[in-house]
Image (tube, rainbow, N blue to C red; front, side, top):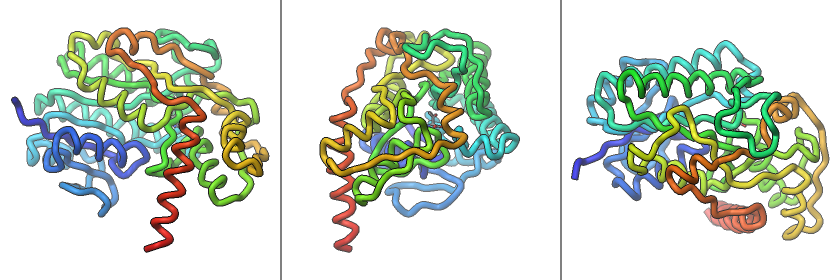
Length: 319
Ligand code: AKB
C-alpha cells in the first residue's frame, strides 16, 4: 500500500489540534506533518513553522516531506474577519490559492478545505437550507469560503485535483478553544458553567444556529476524505449537520447538571452575523454520497463537555 504523508496547516487551531491526533492514530505520528504560523510543543511527531501565504515555503515543505495529502485549516474566522476585512480576504484567499497551486504542481492526491455555514446569506431558507441554494454571504469570511468552494471545483475540473470540503456548523469541543468565530459562545458557555460564573451571551436568546460536537466533526472529515473518489459528487462543499440550538436551549441543557447556572444577554455585532446564517442545513447529499450520520445530540454533548472539562481542570490543579 502507498505510504501517505499528510500536511496539516493551521494545526494549532480549534479543529486542527484535535484532527492531528486522529490522523496520527490512522497514519502514524511520523506521517502527519503539523504546521502553523506559531510553534507548538503539544504535538508529537514532526512540526514545521509555516505561514501559508508563503507559497515557496509551502512548496519546499511539500517536497521535503513527500506530502500526498493536505488538510488546509489555516483561516481567519467570521467575527475576527469583520474587524479586518481586507486582511481576512487576503489571508484566506492567498493561502488557499497557494495550496491549490502547490498541490497541482506536486501532484498531491487529496486536499481538504473547510467551508462553513457562513456561505449562506439572509435570503436562504433558515430551516434545512438546501445544498444548492444561491450563496450571498454577509461576512468577508463567508465570501472567502464561497470563493474557496468555487476555486476547489475549478481545480477539480481543470486539473483533476481531488479537493474535498465540508460546510462546518459551529464546532464544540473540550480539547481546544476556538478563536474569532461567531459560534464560539457555545464553547465558552461550558467553561463559565464549570467556573460557576454567570455567562454573558452576545447572541439573542432564541438565535438558533447549526452546531456539531467535535467528535462528529472530526469523524465527518475523516469519512469524507476516506470515501471513494467516485462517490464525491459535490465538488464545492457538502452541507453537514449535527444539531441545532439557541443560547437559551444550551443554557437549559447545562442547567440539567448545574441548576443554578445563569445566562444573561449583552448583544453585539456577532448577533447580526448569526442572523444571516441558517438555523439548520439539509445534509442529504452527505448522507447519500458517503453515509454521513451524526451521533451526538445537545444533552449527550453537555454531559461529555462537563465531564471532560472537569477532568482537565482537576489534572491542571494537581500539576
Ligand atoms: C465561525 O463562527 O466563524 C465558525 C463557522 C461557523 O464557520 N465557527
